[in-house]
Length: 192
Image (cartoon, rainbow, N blue to C red; front, side, top):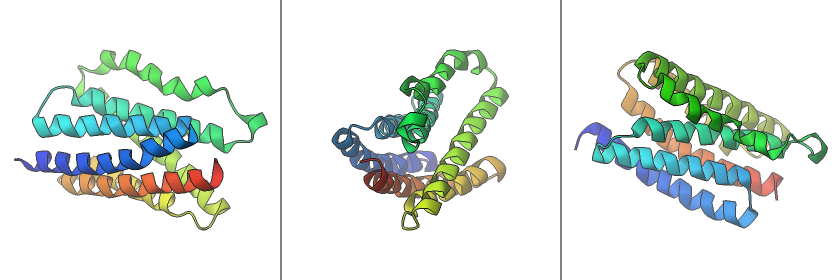
């Protein structure tokens, strides 16, 4: 097995653990936000399986993972607001429109990488801002913040430092676990 396949196996095991944490909580609390993050984790799991078995369709699995993460962040923002200030629920699904336009840019590797990097960076920045807000409001919740900082570091290593993609993926695995635990912790204390 090549290093990419071993890293895919590592990420798939970690993502299964994340799904083990997120899916029961999504059903228990009937939360749109946790459901969308669970779908994102499931898409990431499919992407890891595609890497292990060297199948086609990794781009679509990665895109759906990022898009459902953005949808989950929109739902997180919506749930964080008071009831009178919330935007309609269907606005949380606005990033899904990217599925319509993605085939147009799919044949150009440069534009595709630029769009994926922009989506990833935007999701990480928004997640970091949300985690910072929750950290300031409630001093005891640092798991979500630490997970988002690790995501930011792994993003910077992957896109801006050549030759360290393996280290970046290892950090993504750790940040998936920490962020999943942080989401459950934040949800248990804020959104019951």
